[in-house]
Image 1 (cartoon, helix red, strand yellow):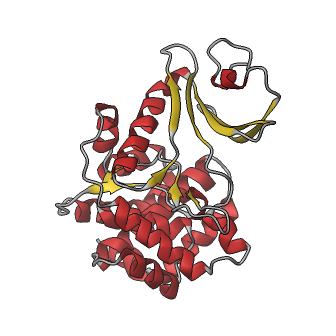
Image 2: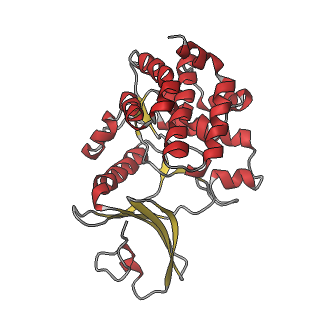
Image 3: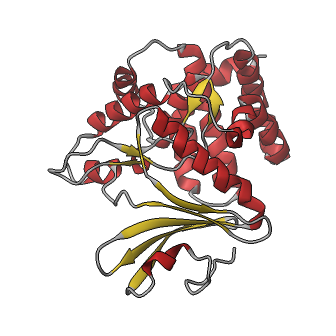
Length: 299
């Protein structure tokens, strides 16, 4: 995607005019680009650009941040949102820093089990969000598990679909009977939790709400298990202890397999990235939940 130059009149970095500044690219895709913009005075902010075709996503992300904040969870503060139907849209937020939960574990400030318990606790708080969402989140709320399954049918290579179709059918049957849907983060792993620097007083803050939707709570827990590689029973138990409420073990197992397959298809097969990572996760899912594959295969 094309990113506007800092000299453009509508550039979000215009607040830094007259001050030396630098930009660090954090991510770049065909539809979005994210930068950390720093001023030499020490101030910084996160600038996210959305291509014209992704303009709706900019509004959704702003609405998602507002909704999560209404639930009492820590999030970045939105500084500005500029949308343009034909040009690049820009969302600017405060910079929460680089001290993520992943870094805290890597540097020994928290054990992996402590981090998993914190993720479970944050998900429990997330799932209690009750506020009425903005109309900008209407489409997110209607993007159901059934929608995801249909998308996999369209995108999955035919030779692989034969292998996974029974599992998809099993998930589809189970979710039809789920009555309670909650707001789900959709991708809560260690890198999406930003902590305060050591010694500072600030609660954990959450980032990255592109996967936020309404779904069974087991779906969100399963996604966190997959993306934190917590397939081990001890690690799962610690995350669930942090969550603190009962779940359907059958539905949770199905969703762990489902999200593993979904990640493997999109990342390893279609995007040709992280292939070894997702192949390993698929093996872990098969080893940890052989009954899901066996039961699905016999139906």
